[in-house]
Image (tube, rainbow, N blue to C red; front, top):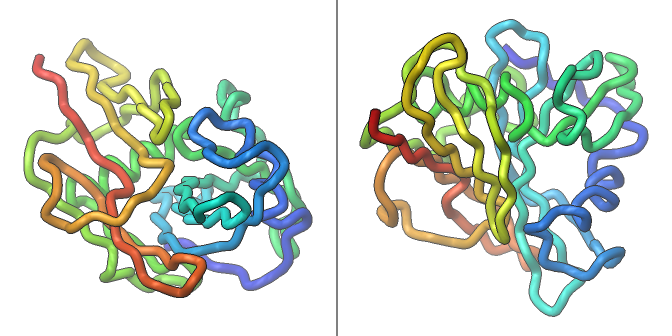
Amino acid sequence: MAVIHHTTLSPTKLELLAEWLPSRPWYQGATGTTGLAKAGGFRLDDPEGEVGLEFMVVTDAAGDEPVAYLVPLTYRGAPLKGAEDGLIGTCEHGVLGRRWIYDGAHDFVLVEQLLALLAGRTTAQAQSESDTPDPTVEVRTEGAGVSAGPTGPGTVTDTADASLVTVGPMMEEGPVSTLTVCRVLRPAPAGDGAGRRVLAGWSAPDGARQHGLFAHLAVSEA
């Protein structure tokens, strides 16, 4: 169970993201013009209780039209070897001390737990409350999934609006599948699309509630 500490972070998450987001291929604003605000999201639990896992939505209202971005974040007490490309930055946590913050697409713990969510083996948790499921997160489990067990992220490829993560068995031969993490969020009906997918909500800058696709899984044939 994740324990949410209501304390200080220095620098804050939004301060770190204001520097990191403009470097991403899927960022749609002008460099250096971020006007970020927290807009929603949810958390997952790390079964080992070591890594914080948050799916954070931020809106950028600095451009002509506001854009909502999904940034899955992991919080660690030490650097993650091999995930240097995914490091967003470090901060000082008021309770836990130094934390290393990663883009979750590059962190095997977040990838495994997102696959578990897509398989119905775990439950989305409230973003700001401990031990509280979030019933607004909708998980559609139709279609094939990835076998249980260690998978870990393989190659992470950023497109104009998403990150594509290759996933598959780490210890044996098998089909490689694609886990899509939507980065630019767009409102969409829950019935749109096919296969395993996660849909959740966020708030637009004017306060309107939006709901759309956060992630989906495309399983390759063996």
